[in-house]
View: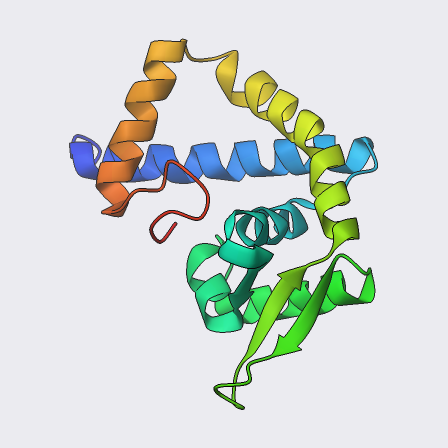
Length: 153
């Protein structure tokens, strides 16, 4: 089905993801910053009211699987970047909350992350193409994925 535009778009998305994510991850690692999976969780917590989310909400917002989100939060807790807080209204669930150290790690990683995105994506596309791509991906995802903390990414 090489001439099916939907399949071609899907293939292009998968190839771009498989190349861009490791490149950005490598830049963060080379600069001694938090891993990309940690950055994603920290970013979502930072955007949330009170800098905390129920684990189930975090699992919906982060670009990681729900199982992986739980493991990443455990790693972040061990590093002092987040903490787990009990949910007083529902003993079965808990919150992940951003610590001051987590906010600082996010702040320090942001310039490296931004530059990596610009280098690995922005050098291949014009600003207008980036806007178009963002809009198209929003449509494909069926939600507002343009900003962290909005919709289900």
